[in-house]
Each structure stands twice: as C-alpha cells, then as structure tokens.
Length: 445
Image (tube, rainbow, N blue to C red):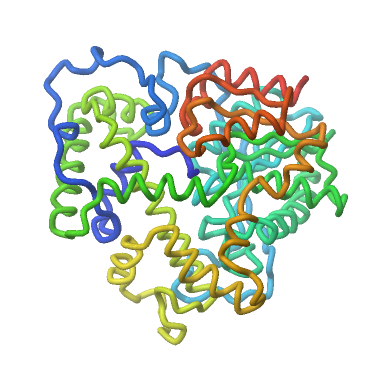
C-alpha cells in the first residue's frame, strides 16, 4: 500500500525521537539479535513477498538504471495550487507550495506523470527508482507526491482530508494542469502518459477516468503498478500486521524499539561506508536475518507512521478535532510529543471512523461507511478499466496487499493488458529486469 517499505526506513524512524514516541513494536525475538561475524554472504537473496516488500530488489537481481543528476537531468520546483490557502503555523515548513520533480531528456520525448504511493513524497526512493526506469526507456518524468503526503494535503488537497478518490483525482488533475505548461517551457513533449504505484496506481486510474471527461491533458497511456483493488481490504491487511505484533504496553514496546535500533546500529558500525543506502539495507537484512514476524512488524510500523502523519496533517488542515482541538493554536514552537504518542496508537481505520467519515458526512448525510468502503478502490471503475485500451497493469502474484480473489479480479478486468510477475511482493521488484522490461514494453510498445 505504501512506499517501498524498508529496514532502512525503520532504522531512521527508530533513530528519531518522533519514532520512539509514536511507534510501538513486538516483544524481543531472536530475529533482531546481534548477527555473528561473517553471516553476510551466507544468506540467500530475499525470495518471499515480505522480504521483497521490505528490502526491495536484491543487488544480484538489479538491472542497471540511469543515474539522476541534479541540474543535469533533474529539476525540482514548487507550484501554488491553492494560492489563497492559509497554511497553519504548525505546518510552516510546507508554505513554499506543492513540491514536484522533473526528470528530463534533451530531445523530444513522451512525458509521464508519476504518482507516489501512500505517504510518499515526490522524491521518495521508490518514486526515483520508477523515474529512473522511465527515463531509461526514453521519457521525461514528472514525479508527484501522494495525495496522502503532508506536502500535498497542505498545498493541493481541496478538502484537506485525503482518501476520497474522486476528490483526490480532482486535486491531482488540478496540480498536473498547472505543472504541464511549466514543463513544456523546459522540454519538448510529444505525448502525455500517466502511472503510479500502490495507492498512486489507484489515484492514476481515477485521474485517467476524470481526464476522459475533462480532456485537458489527454493521457495516451495509463499504467497501474501494484494497485490495491479495495483500499479497505488493503489497509486492514497492513493495520493487522502492526496489531498482531505490537503490544499495548508502552514500556514493552519501547524495549523492543531500543533493541531493534541497537541491532541496526551494530550493523552500521561495522560497515566501511557511512551511507545509509540500499547496500546498507541489504547488508542489514543479510546479517539480522529477520523472520516473518519481524518483517510484518516493520511493514506494519511503516504503514502506521504514514497513517499517523496523514491523520495529524489532515486534522490540522480540516480543524476536525480528531487529535488537535480546533482552537489549540499550535505554532512552530509547540511541542508535538503528546500528539505523536496519540497518533501512533491510531490505526488507519481510526482515521476513517473518527475524522474522514465525520468530515464528509457533515457535507453529505447520505455518505455512509458502507458507501465509503465501496467507493474506495478500483471496483467502481471496473467498466472503465475493462473498456479502456490505454489502461494497463503490472503486479505480482504474491502482492501482500491483495485480499483473496483480488488478483483474479485484476486479471479478469485487464485481460491481455495485465502483466503479472511471479514474485516481488508489494513494489519490491522495481529494479529487476522483468519489471523494467514490462514497464518499457507498455510505454514504448
């Protein structure tokens, strides 16, 4: 569901004071014990979907992708999508506008709008990986944050309460229409394509449907990468990974967090390089040899952190009173420790029940939870996706966010326009040859 979930993400979160306040983990297990010297090199590459989801593509399986070099083939910029919006003082760091990135070629080429997954920024690791693959296939790329990322919520969300996919599509579409003329001033664009991964794939489908009636952008091809079929089902799967392994006792949770951080720190202290990069991530996986419970904990923790950031930002922007009293008067110097502790105990389901539903029901009393569940995902777009020859799919047979029967539904709806790879978990194979070849075939075929 979310951005590429990694041990590196967990390490950085655990290292931060916010993580100690907001994240609880399972009781100590041998998976997180100190590795014996020389363990690296004996551990096979990740083969199961949980490992792929956490670690990504192992080095031995990675295809060489072009590098992104600032000011040589990459530019970042901001745009004021909602120029009259007042940004609350506590979110002062988001006042510059919606951030996006442009990866560009020197020659005429198609332009691909790329939408990030849950909670991910325009320059998240996974967004950059997909952008590198698209650039290598001969395209310009505009990277956008997820509508659930705080920068988007503050600067581009019309309601400030993301998750209603038709609203999110209108917000994305408005931003794209503002960005496109700026891009055309810098590069020569032949055609316009659209893609997204995880939640960003569902967003892409809704944006494409909207463009079919608005005709302002005219997407010629739309590719969904590892989409959820039902947001309700996928978020329940990810929330359950957290809840299964996280005790309610804060003291026990803190002990586990400290132990995990210590294990990562020991791996880090033994490496020659000081970079916290993919090589470190894979080395940590090899040495620590996390089992299924540990991997589920890390996946659930990463999703919970994304959900907490979403809920806090949305509550502040909508003045919903879910975590922050509307008259709290938070500013740049306010302590957020207590709020973040509270946020870390809230699931995505809590966000839906306590903020999302009350907000939209106040505007439309007929908006029930059943309707919200039914409309959140690809199911309402079945007719459009079946009939649209420009829409394609790449996913995996072992995607951890799909409920039973959902892969079959995707294959039935997309038919020959679906590419289903055997392994990769959720977005974990994006540097592998089979994925890059499928991506290239779709857009260049």
